[in-house]
Length: 64
Image 1 (cartoon, rainbow, N blue to C red):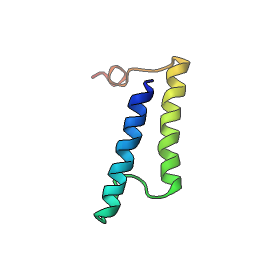
Image 2 (image 1 turned 30 degrees about the horizontal axis):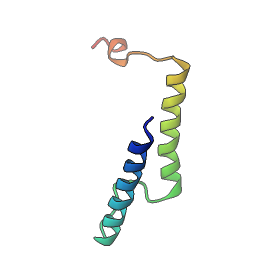
Image 3 (image 1 turned 90 degrees about the horizontal axis):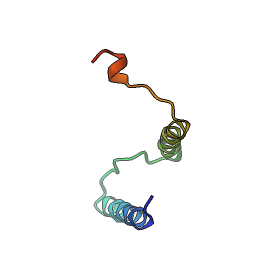
């Protein structure tokens, strides 16, 4: 993981969030902590399965 890219992503998010608030338009993300925790949970679950090395090819399983 690249720290400079992560910092730039955070700064971009902060500026975008500030702009959305300034323009009084809703953000395209969950505005409440439980929604944000759900997104973090999805990310952590994705990483855990990646580290565990288990997965299936969904398209192959469906015959596509």
